[in-house]
Image (cartoon, rainbow, N blue to C red):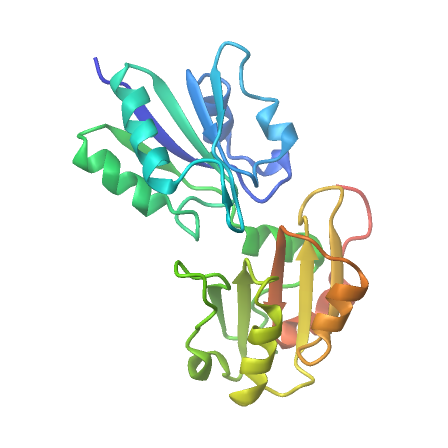
Length: 247
């Protein structure tokens, strides 16, 4: 009897941002494969009877290649297991969820996708930055700062646009190239930028600056991944709207 794979979004860090469905599946799973960005409080929800498998990725450091993760999901399901593939944020927003489902379709393995709160929404909300505000931005664009081939070759001419907020995932490594390229293609050097480190967790730190100076700020404060870049005039609202209590 074939089991089933649930591709579950774990949200951006705060365990209380899990959906009710995600919580139910995590606490009843037979096997859980989880990523580097899934927090310890969420991993603690996995039952002791379940097989826990860490398959996280950091820059140039993969515990398992993606094709092996894909195969492992299919294998465990074919053993009749209820398999939860737990991903930080949302599985379909820079989470490689589509790649994993392609393998399951090919292997005729049943699956279900459970969306999660993506880092852009969660980190922006906890940092006090409305991604759209009718006085500042009428559109928002999600981008990855680290492409499949390791470059940061983005469509720069499309990104410099008035009344638009940019949210860049995995952008720390390529931050120098990102900032220089945006300025070169016409973005004003004074464009506000925020970096949200470990967003929605008790360790969250938020730094704001300009596109021309943000690299120096990051270096001075030793900002580490996971961190999200938010670029746009909406960042000017951060200090006014950030909740300074404890989550």
